[in-house]
Length: 522
Image 1 (cartoon, one colour):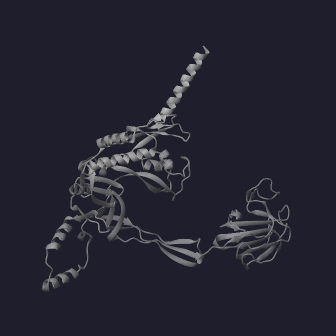
Image 2: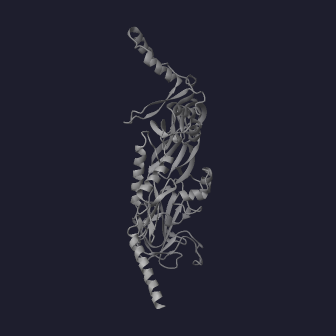
Image 3: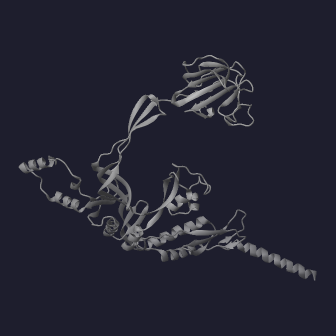
């Protein structure tokens, strides 16, 4: 019994040895590897064409298949296909021979090849490209777009050589009916000579004495395409050449493009989104500086927005006459004795009326600009005249070089008996005898005892400004005296209605107390 089991074991081991030894002689066998994927399934045009041992083998087979197809035909060949692979790691596996894979690739490529390339014209409009059957199809397409904005059909699209390009490329030339006739006459007419040439030059030099707006023609004056147009000859598969009707429909259709919008006063994100026909979420997604619909936007900010526009734009200049109100430019009269903060209207403006001849520019039917060419005044406008100061206004400085604010401007609770609950200045805590200086240059209008203030100095400055300095121990200036900014005017003290040594500093504009901290620079 033991011998039987031992014999079976020997037989199994022998069979495994023979099998392993035979694998070395089996072609295209993939041995196990610890280096990653080792079996590659190759696909072409969505069809599996075989299994190989590497991606490089797949590329080599593809090149051989292309060469084999090219040798089999003298016609121009177009094949738009590339092999793809799906890899896996296997313990062992069987690959196809390269010859079989090449044959399969030839079979698949032949089913997808295009052998008859047709002569055509490639029309490039900006970044948009379309292939058309003939040159007349190109001009018909362009003429169809142009005619939408030329209702009288007075302009014709021609294709001419683009002299700015080194290679042969055509571009557009738009001529009016009159310009076409003049061009034809120019090529056929003989040059003028003798008395005829002299008379022609004379009449050309004579100008009418004056023009009335009625003498000028109105209507379409200029028309052009908004994008750069290039036309070149090419050879393409028939399925890549577009019919004229389909090309017209495609070119006239609108596409979404990004542009920049400058935020105006009163704008909101939702309002801007609605204006351009997009959602607020899309607007936020297009602008990385916006976090949510509550993000702050300010006038002058630039936002990216999406607008719809045709692939080929048409720019039109129309000559128009119309009447409008107008205002004359404001006249300024400088007064060197006034500060720049002062101005006065000495003549009110009166609106005028005029008749205008203007060149109005449109793109795709939307007005983009207007330039006045000539005008006739019906009623003269009267300009506004403003007298304005030229001198820079005075500045104000802190009246002491030390101390701290012990009581601020405005409402205060529990003041000393007799003091106001609304503090009309600021109290600066300093020791008695601290030098007090003029906050700005001006004229002393009060210097002495003032009820509540104790010893005080008032200084009149420009533009109705008065500064007050109270609770002084000593006054160093007198009424009527002119002082300069920073000049020593008093010593601080504790006089009048005061709870301790400090300087009361007050500023009034046209008699109204204001917070000095809003006007004084340290």
